[in-house]
Length: 199
Image (cartoon, rainbow, N blue to C red; front, top):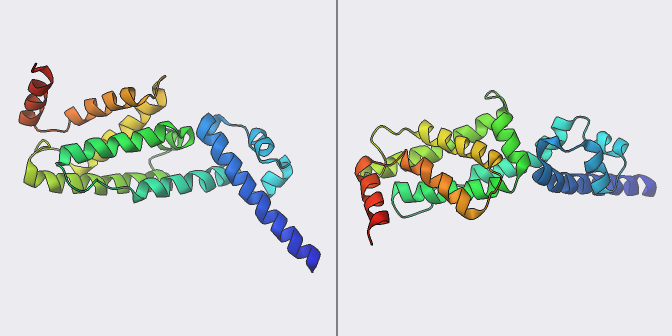
């Protein structure tokens, strides 16, 4: 009985170590990380890793599921115009994703039918709808921009984050700004360009 309890405690501790190590390795290396590398980083044998996570997908889901849940909790910042709120939302989301190669890999290489990708797109579409609703009052987004357009702009930025050799904040901000320009109303865009060029 005591031995069984100890074994259960050891199993729980091993699982936690594996998930912690997998999170670190996958965030740094992306989906190309080897299972042996994760086992070594967690201090367990490869057999122990596979007892807890029979497939690579099981382990990846255990790690990225938490990260996707965090992304799914994010929403537009309160206050400000729709365009400014989207700019901030995109910047924060892409900065977080740039530090998490596994999440970027899941979102950019996953099938559109993948449950996690579908859930992410559904959430981003809701965020997009919030922005469209706000823009009905402040008119900062182009009249033909839809919630889906906004969701797919962020998904496109995720791919950009994957390809960027330098994910420094200035580089991320530049690409966010390029995406926002495609969503904002033309008079807002003209005003922004005028402000940028005025002495």
